Length: 142
Image 1 (spheres, one colour):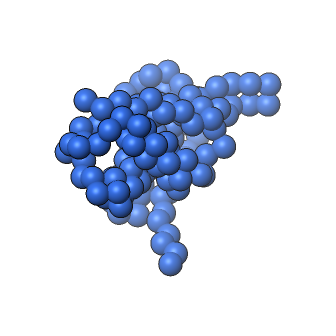
Image 2 (cartoon, one colour; image 1 turned 45 degrees about the horizontal axis):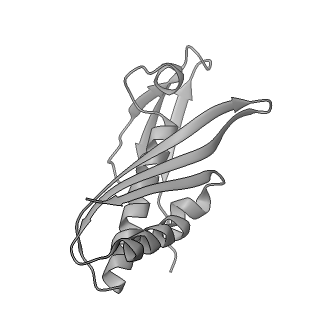
Image 3 (cartoon, helix red, strand yellow; image 1 turned 180 degrees about the vertical axis):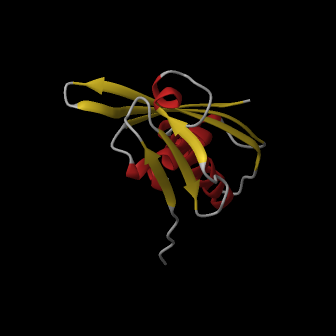
């Protein structure tokens, strides 16, 4: 089975003064503005890194939910935050790291089983596999 999803970007102008829009196939984003300020200067708006972070948090959380179900558990709540690090190096910008933080409420699971399943989800969710970054995870039961 192959599933294809698409997103698109449109840009006009120079890097610093130019402006762009991002859209997704589903319409969840439709011509969402982005630019140098939203990416590098904390101006309100979106940027590629926060979209990667949201995608990674969502993918990891769904993967964990699946593993929990396969092992007889159902999460009452899984709250994941992903922080993508954008870094300028000698050869330009890169994303060397993603940090996942998870707070989970799961009845009946012991800490060792929880950590094992969370680590498996981190290693095997498709977005983790896609990224060349060092992906870390801080997971805790609440």
